[in-house]
Image (cartoon, rainbow, N blue to C red; front, side, top):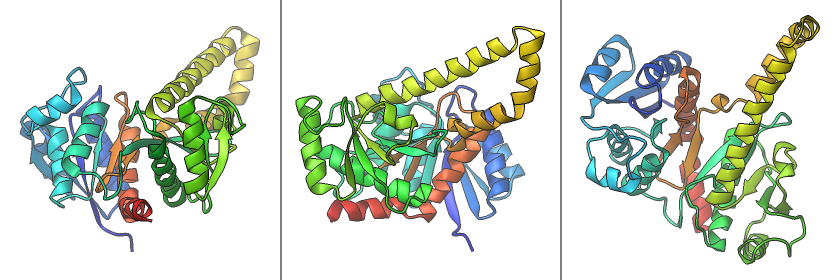
Length: 329
């Protein structure tokens, strides 16, 4: 029998909140009978929804953190915001995980400051599953730490490997340093130092990876500083959108191409679903006490549902505890 799990959810997170959040929570509750959600937000939003749904509890929050606010300052100032309240529920063990599609910076700050870092973790890192057409791979860090020390990347590799093992089912993930060349002497001084440390301290280290290796899924875990990872991730996401739009425009040009589009419709729809970030619902912040998933601001109801369900899976797979064990090893 699946473990019963309680996840706190930010009702105000995302460009289309609270509507899509409520729809996504409803779908998540229907999909997982052992899931309870604590919905954090204005009382007039969360209480009626909780009253109408089993296994949903309302937690009123009188403040909200907007996308434009300074993350750390907002977290310290707005202690009754939906993001801070959700993270506090995890700290107080009323919930085991937190999901929000709100301000990424505020989520990272609140999770780190309120939930706290796992013992031995120098810097929590934001990971993501890259939905390659070949097979999904993990990238870590993708934005939590723009400035890094080489030793941080060793921990990023360990944390990303635990995530790949438990969440993607890869028994022996191969971790690689994202760099500008395969040879160990390539890259900046930072990259060369990181390569040396990872080779010495990361048992599953497989060497350097180049950008072209990501979508080709030539490794299982791609390790990088948050600046590099975020640029890489946004490039992949932007390229995917442009390619699908361009392909659609080409197929709608004439009667002949429309017939071709009709023949390919099913296959293209499958491919689009396969490479959609909505499948995973967001990016986990690894290295904090408890599960924390940060969704896209543009999340739809499906992405919210999957983000909540992934948060519950993180708890059931004991990812946070396993990461703490790797830090002390």
